[in-house]
Image (cartoon, rainbow, N blue to C red; front, side, top):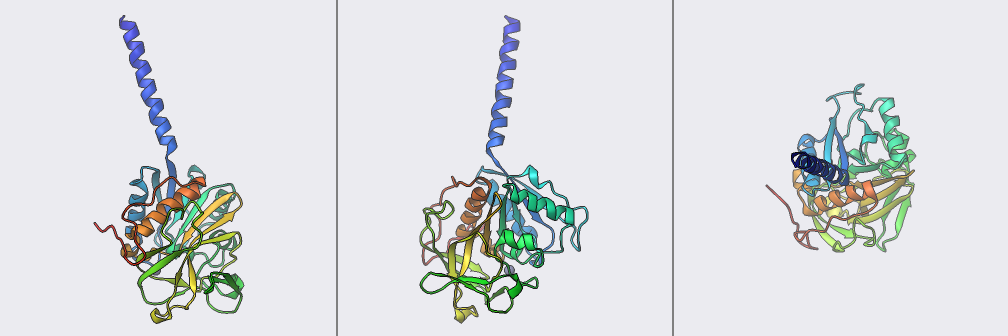
Length: 295
Ligand code: ZN
């Protein structure tokens, strides 16, 4: 009798242990890379993005931080331990070994998420530019690839004309227009929604191969923009890897936009798994009103 009770308790323990393992395995393991950024706000935006991902119960999030200046010879995160890597990094080159490990990770099917100034990083690293599709600053020019934007009819323009890569006018709230609502990231999203105050990146340029534009924003000349419809949500296929890229997310007041939060959550889930299960929340912005989660 006593022995069978022990057996029953042991069985229960093993069962509980196995159940928790399977729950942990269901979660997507994400790594945010950071440590250098021309945006003074980066430690805060990493904290915000960590919280936005963890609050879904869909992700576990680790953070890998470089030294504050120069190439960090000790920066060797184990990318292959993760389903998806999110970059909040815009700084010095990573060590060659880390660059190779990163390219290998994406090529073999790892997910990658590019947020705002992460597309300013590594202007001369050709594989990185293939992976992100488009970038700005960092010495980018016509040798980096064409400008890519949509014309007034919604046709994609690939413009090879010479000039700098990357620019923005004055910060303001702006409307996002969904161009493909059949993609898992944008499915169910209103066709137009207001993003909270942000830098509207324009004149991004790059190899833009295997790149798909999901949404754009009109860079109004009144605000110093190009007058073009600039890519705001993009995907890139690189090897077996999936990349989600948004140039949104300059500051806390840009990242607490429910639209940004939703795109980060769904885009990261898609980059990791190819599917999206996370819903469009009820407080998602409308065509003319921003919606923010300020705490
Ligand atoms: Zn910025």
